Image (cartoon, rainbow, N blue to C red; front, side, top):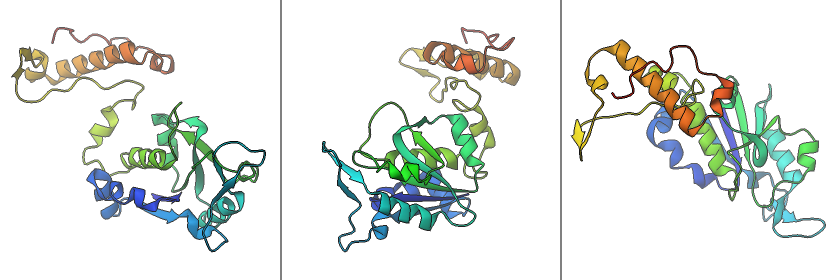
Length: 239
């Protein structure tokens, strides 16, 4: 999978793209992530990418000519799927991550300031607009990085055990089940007995039930996407 990020802050990505599983996946060639400085596409000697808004108001607006030059130059042929990271976009969830993973090439544009000149949208420069949620960030860089990290987990070989990806939160419209490790007892709290039983069928039932329990308690909206299945809550509740 190939991903290119257009940003005015390329150094923002230097450390995250070299660390942990994402960094190892890139180093191993399992996915390619390039970061391109948007200022390289500015026409003036000062590499200006923003200007004051027509009609007045606070903040600056990213300029349509710079956006168009950058996206058109980097889309390639066949064109990459272009994504604008913006608070106006569709809320990112695991289903959308899986859909984007099916794209061979992605071009991620990091919005900044008060936003982009609307004409960049009217020209059809973006195939999709994505937001992390209903809150405001200084720019799209954090959202782009979150998306890249999420995508990388779906690239074969980046996560060594595919089972980890299949069972994690939101993979099946359920939150994750509780996890425990050593020591067996900590400050009066013990690891649930079922996890020490060695009975894998029993453990699996317990985990499914706890995942459903957590989903009902914390994210009941997910049950509208995938209702409770027969037998899903059969695991014993006392461990």
